[in-house]
Image (cartoon, rainbow, N blue to C red; front, side, top):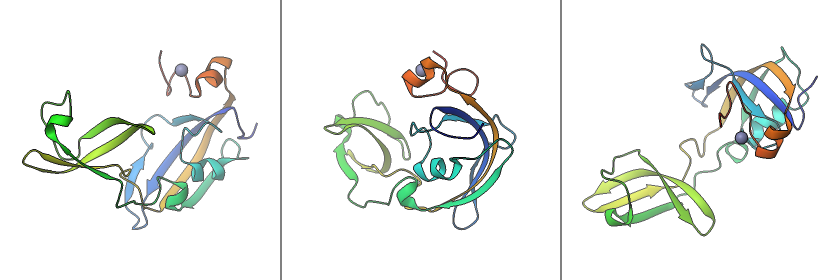
Length: 160
Ligand code: ZN
């Protein structure tokens, strides 16, 4: 069986940035499960894994455009604390979901001065080239329910 659309894929990975610093890793934890072709993972990694089989290892360098996007200096919002409903204490680095015309967007609190809050809508890894070392651990067919939901169920996936 090889990796293609509608397969549930289990991988072990180490993610490093362009300076060689480790950003994330599944080593010593449960493997990451995702459903291929459903944008569960970044596009560049999905592309690199297509056609691979269990036991194969890949090393891939993914530019920002195929990872978490280029950094957009304009993707920021200045708001008043009063506008952040339901949040008692605004802290640096806190993630806040807002509803905009384009849908739900995630912002991080970048600065707080007085009652003014600067929210940054860029992903924390925006603008970065990401290096993945990946080993394919398992590949299986997705269930009908998983296909309907667009994500993996059971161990390593969604529980509901
Ligand atoms: Zn589901």
